[in-house]
Length: 194
Image 1 (cartoon, rainbow, N blue to C red):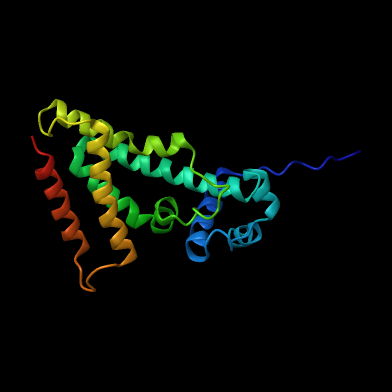
Image 2: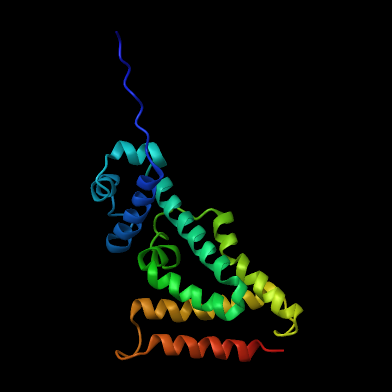
């Protein structure tokens, strides 16, 4: 009786582990120095599994970034019933919980790795909850009437800048980042108030 080899089935948990491990390795060593062998070893699997799930290094890096944008989007959607302030709070919380991924998504670590760009849909979707919250607040007369995209980009840029400084630990050594961030959110609300 001939027995055929069974195809290896790679689980979603292995896929998620590979994405997380890759984000950590790239954050630590940079995209140019990380190999698929490094990723496989860190996830305790084979390079065959990595190739099977992602195809190659650039596809793996793209998947990491896209997955990060999806996770970030999901956290923003969950916070959106609380309005703009809760979106801001969720932004910082997500970044602090996913430091390596945040730096990979927004820190330019992949800029030198030309073959890897986030998919336009994943990146655009990440901003959708903020755009919706701005439009809703404008409709309710809470925010100044201005182009929604401009207001959303201005708000995103300000919270992003402060979170990026916190993660990089650029500032006074005894900085109270949570208090500074809360004050920045309050200032943003006052600055855009109708």
